[in-house]
Image (tube, rainbow, N blue to C red):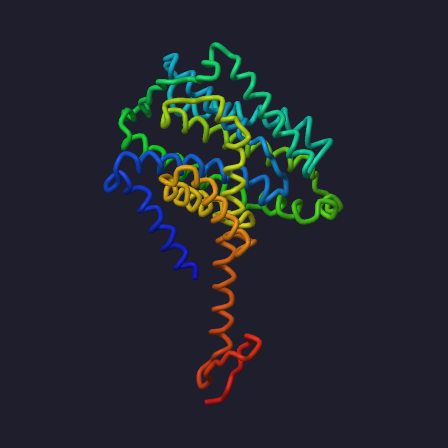
Length: 340
């Protein structure tokens, strides 16, 4: 089974990296947005799927990174692009620390979700009144940078070049989050999600780990915003809107919040559904909502959870049907074995 998973993963990477070779500019642009939203969804799900915290205003950290990078590139301050991405991550982390120190010590659950939503809306309004940040029109004509590595320089001005950089950056950030989620730190987060009181009795500082997860999530969301600004070449206050905050939620629920790869699958599926219904003027939102509702009702644990359940049932059926027996399904759907 691990071999099959590895083959599927490598096949997905191959498709992702070869998009510029067979897709037109429209598909290429959407694929780049999908990569950015994948990083954003993985960042959000570190809180929800692994730590048990819900943030309804996570787009605020995304917008902080996007505006920081977009403003620096447009102003031509000459900072290396990789440094700008790291700076966006630091800015997102600082904002998350300040938010978490105030909120996580006093509230969790739906109260935390509402407070983060309110803070994101405050940020969106403040940005809309900022002349330096373009007010409601945002920052337009953001140039795509050159990647300076010291020993070599790569011009990312073309869509194909920046897309390949997006692939590498998204892969690196996703690998970092995978290590965080599947290491000792991630296992402690899962235990906090399942039973915070028992985890406290084990001697774990639950508030500190929640704050650390909030900080990592804010930092990687800020990096996602920094990657987005040169790709879209425009950043508006809508990047901090609550609607943008719902995208990683929908992606995680659609793909499976309990799985690390669930947000990735959900983001891709959501983008495919959205693109397929783009010509249904006036009915697009209705069709998307109906499709998402059917999928969520049919697979409460997400698409990844549904696939795992089907694989588990198939493996159980194969293991019960040994040599010299043939399996039959009984009236209640149970496997009945008969000797050959």
